[in-house]
Length: 212
Image (cartoon, rainbow, N blue to C red; front, top):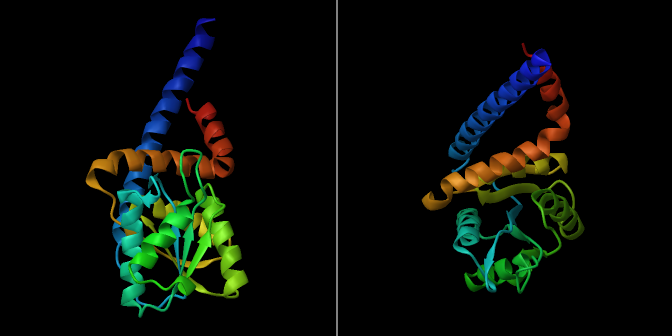
């Protein structure tokens, strides 16, 4: 019995150590990725995708507004000709879809309605990329050069799902507010872990079980 409890305690200790190491390395990697994707791409893009985030009433929250302002900066720098896909459905606590609020925000700042494509059904980052790709192909055709603009630490997951959907996409980061830095990075690390768990989870558990 003692040996069994010792083995269980050792397994738990190894698991906690591995989780701590994973989170530390993941946060460091997210920060590194964010720092290297804050500049606008040199090549022109055909489409800019902006994933949704929380609203305040019918308006974008400051968090979402920072993504939209970053997208506007890129759009203007590249000649005001790219289409912008605003992607986000309506949450249970929201009075309108995130796409509708984002569309209004961009239109008020000079983006023509004809260049804004609303994707108002997605509820996750994966769906943001999937449904946006479908709309891009429907409205503009395949093979479009895409920029995904999101909060800096959100970019790795956006890039992963964009690639899985076959989008030729570059990542452009909007700086996260200092007050939200720690919460955002921790939450994004958890979300990224959940996204890749089916691929890496079983090998990790086997490795933990085999550790002395």
